[in-house]
Image (cartoon, rainbow, N blue to C red; front, side, top):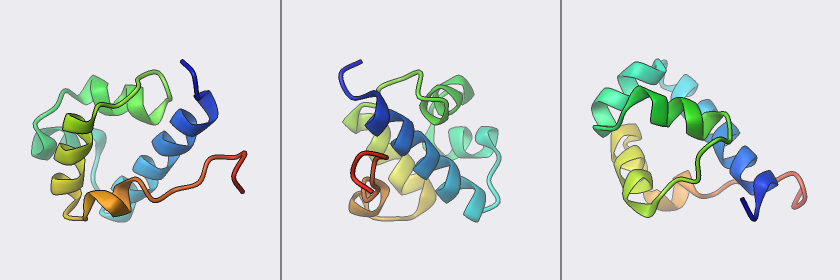
Length: 77
């Protein structure tokens, strides 16, 4: 993994967005049509998310893709 801080920050951001909507990991996975383990791995920085999965997550969260990727890693703060 080339950018672990960014991957971790993205996972934290996804968790925040999910919890703001009161979605469980399973609910988000079901709506986005991905496996629950994928959500877990993204939120725990164990998986580098693909553009395809990001588009599905943004649609499931009913936000523009731009909002999903609008976060700062710990080095950017």
